Image (cartoon, rainbow, N blue to C red; front, side, top):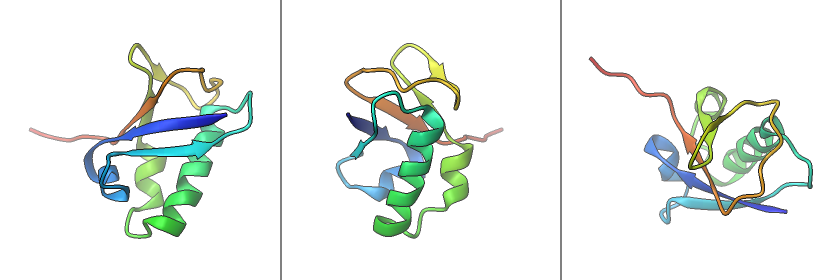
Length: 86
């Protein structure tokens, strides 16, 4: 299966289109997807910290996913980096 990931914040620097498509075996978990994305960014966008991916959340248009969740079969997922403000 191929997963389309919409990028936000600093993660958007990985691709000017704001999206990536990554292969993931059927039944893969969000933790699996996080590892694939970290590996991809290490090769294609080395300026993006792996720690940023570890601290970011994956979400559908309806819910935030946990690492133990199976990746749902949806058109795309978003990866949401942590935010701060005051």
